[in-house]
Image (cartoon, rainbow, N blue to C red):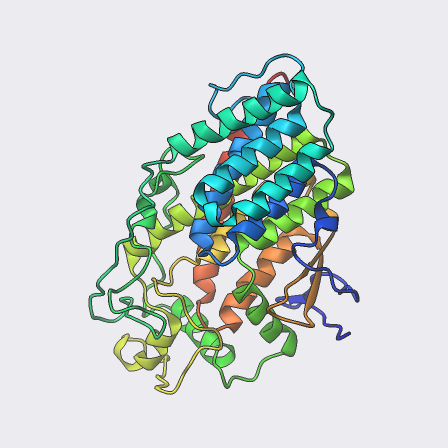
Length: 418
């Protein structure tokens, strides 16, 4: 087994595990029904875009929370319309809610979902409590599905770029229609009133020293033929295939299991986390298409047009990782990861963890972390060393994500009776 060290801008992010830990291994989430269905959910959503994944994950986990919380009453509700009879099973409610949401959106995966539901319900004693729990879960699922029926996510729109220095242009991954996810900044958020309240400030001027510094960094380390440390290249490839929802939900399950969190705590924690992930991406697309800032590959090809005498062009520059088809500033992965980290730190503490990631798409690379912020720092490096973001894209995303994650944790699903 190949062993690799993961560094965060010169600092060790943790000892590397020597045994493969598969991302969706059920053993990682065997503590309770809520964690089990989080694994099932992510398996069901596999292959979707990160943005669709985050939306469906938020719907699912909020339905699970609302169902469980209707039984336990430990937290302020999200909807406030779901009631559970006394004695209803919270386990049955959680399983029924997750199953109903996922089967509604993904009927083609119904057989696997039905099998998962049977396994969950099979461990619950038959009786009125089980029946009432199932009814509660179905009600929570139906309410969440209805709430999100017209949230602006269904009809994609595309952006037609405008030429000029600093302006985003089509990159090789783009369809002829133009920039993708142009509509995503207008999707109704789950946890914040208005994502425009979290819009970042503008990117640095093309003639500034900050722009020059970050331009030269990505030009030096982010190209397909650049010389860079092997562990940074591993990170770039790893996090290109490991979206924020993947790492954050895996980390939450591992931390919750290690700390012995209750079913109700896990339902709340995963709902907060996935609300933050979704809303971070909505906020970042509002910012992206507000500024329409070019990707590093476009900037480096046109370095002689930016008015900065110290940014020499390189027409042959090709990023290590293929850039997504939308503007660069700020980084979506950076923003969503920072929002997730903020919520995770407040739920489980900032450090002292034992979090391991692996990904079948990047065999041989196993990452181990003891602090959530180290994950975010590696994500930032991954996008720069992958050649698809400037460092200031990442830094702006971190600020945006931290603010948004803090808002959601502070204002949503609070303890009912402190």
